[in-house]
Image 1 (cartoon, rainbow, N blue to C red):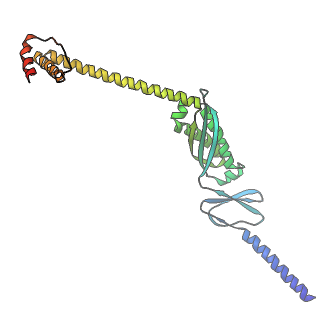
Image 2 (spheres, rainbow, N blue to C red; image 1 turned 30 degrees about the vertical axis):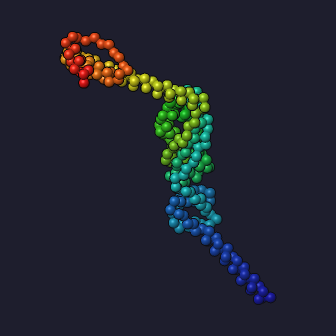
Image 3 (tube, rainbow, N blue to C red; image 1 turned 180 degrees about the horizontal axis):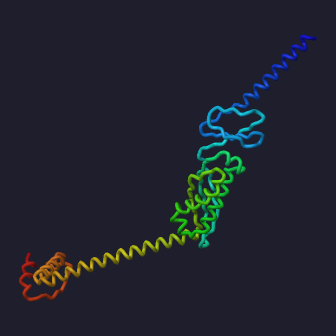
Length: 257
């Protein structure tokens, strides 16, 4: 009987010892370099643990891990009405990281979800207060405005917004056709301006040439004879020109060649 009781006591002692050992081991916490541990003692915040091997008091203390690396969150595509009443589909991506892990745990229930939702709301507000031309041509400025709004709010949560990028802005089909016609009209306008500028420069060169020839009668006669010679090279072409009598001898010599 005594042997049986001794055996039961030994077994119970071993079980209790194993339970105590497991409780003690549960108080050993290992944190990686990119992690921090927020410790609560009886439900109250007590300290933040750094990377490495840490010990917390089992049962009395609990720890929540916080990832300190930069995170990426996609803002889903949504329809937004611009200031000039043009609907566009826009989506973005936000990069953020935790700077104060205790605030990220205590002040906000789920900072990942909160950052995504707040960025989505800020995206709608900024694009809604901007005209279409600004949204299309000044994406960086629009994204910077969104970042400033979100960063100002999330800083109280211990979150730092690293960057916000607008990935895509899609226009309605009707607006695409209108903008394509506008671009085509702009290209035609530029082509007309370039052609007119070329005509103007050509006329200026012709005017200078005419002035130079008028100031030198001999050069004018030679230019006339050269033109006649070029035309005479094709026997099917005929031309009648009036010229001074003193140029007749030169013309005969040219035609004899």
